[in-house]
Length: 290
Image (cartoon, rainbow, N blue to C red; front, top):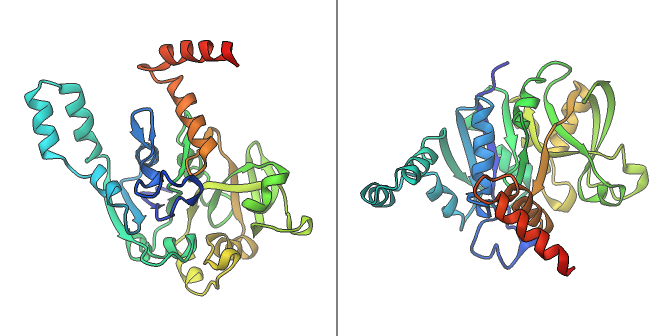
């Protein structure tokens, strides 16, 4: 099935990386020479998505500005003969049909996704968390789209997480079907006891959902943290109709986490044609002093 719409929730406050996020949205943190949110938008575009809704909140106008045209900058680059930079800047504003809406009240991820109801309509759509960058040969969201509707109503992207960290995530009840594809029949958001842990597989940053999720979200009561949890709404689909879980190929970077930011900078920098050689030598020199 062709999926053409994606929703990117980017309204979080970024409290785990304060004070950097006091005035700078974590979605705008650069990885070498591109902000986090651009990596996510480019992943969506590479997967065939044409229409993207980014959900922001107050103080995140920088995200909108980044994807807008910049006539003054473009004129200066053209005048200076910096053709390569000019093409790069112009390409950003034409990546996809990008619109924005604000989540005026911070009531959780489920509440944020519900804001996309009129944008989505009755189509299945992708959800791509705004602080999760996944670098892979095949776009992670495309790996999910390719499995949509194969084994149930919706697909979640999953990875196993350390046992000591499972309480920070959601735990899924899964059964392997083949290769990296699982059937998912239950979920628990942020399990606090061993009895609540269904497995060490957790949803990480990507899912493809049917439009019926909105009707479920409208009656979903606040859960963990007093917020409307998307996991709680997805659980209803998993339990009643089943969902597919795909252990996606790729390296995930949590850009709302200090170490995740450092990992992304170093590992992507080691692959970037303009920085890889110099960074590799720098790391070798630093290693000698440790």
